[in-house]
Length: 427
Image 1 (tube, one colour):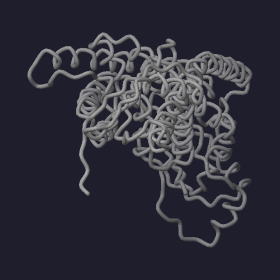
Image 2 (cartoon, one colour; image 1 turned 180 degrees about the horizontal axis):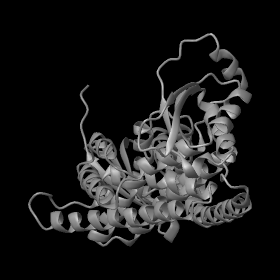
Image 3 (cartoon, helix red, strand yellow; image 1 turned 180 degrees about the vertical axis):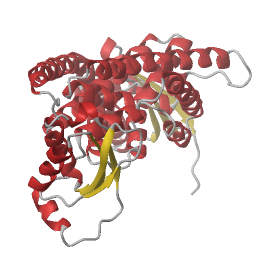
């Protein structure tokens, strides 16, 4: 429920109260004793979904330009008469004016935005290097990226070019600032004793952001939908902001680390993930806000808003399609890596256990094969360790026979190294 308080300009009392009477809304009127610009204050409760249609009718009689309107959330309205209003105004979304106010609140002043962004990026980058998921998630609590993502879509559906531009600019510059911040921190740490020599490509949290696939779209689309729903319904958005930040800040920080360590493949894959998530979040939020029925207040702006939304959606979809080529390649490469790793373990163990290599016993198989190797056509390095007794004969063609078997079963080129370990077993 909402409580609306409206200052009535001199001479407009009849028009305003007539609108409320036509809507069947109970109200209270007080004489205004301020500076004399207004003759009365009217206060009335209305369901959340009724705020916009009631205000539209009041604005139609010229109230918006000459008055002040305050919309306040209320905990409870105790009245049997309120049921009729709830039946009249069914729905759950907040009004257009409340939507704009919430969007503006979510996008803080630029200085505040960049301070929180830089701090969250520093913490997230540290979490990546420490391979700490908890640290990364903690950093996302203060990342302020939900506001710009939502305000850009709100501005688009309401034909507010200033809000749209600010939202887009904050998103782009914010993510660039995150990349630069992570790169600078990476350069500083890699030259100190605070961080031991490490190949960041082997850190699981970094590896997760450098192997994007189509599943990444579900996180981004879900985050955008959740963000839009939270603001449309006027629900809490702090946890939703964390989900949006998780989709953007860690891969942006990974991109910066790739720059610091000089790994173009990390920069490319993590950068693609950032762009895909950014576009998907904006797309889902934009579509949901439009489907929810938000339109510009002035009818003459509706056509312009529809055209802008269509162009924006088409542009985002085109960008996603182009980037999906990369996602598709990475998804296919990840599948190939999994196929080779699984096949190598299964086939080598089966070959050794079948006795075709005499008295050799299977120990381990290690596969050095990643997405980059698949994309660039490099063979998989398969290292096999087998044990033998003190008097066992070592077949001379073990590596080649395993190579032939794995090439046939996986369809990929492999290079096999076999290490023979002399072992003993108790009776």
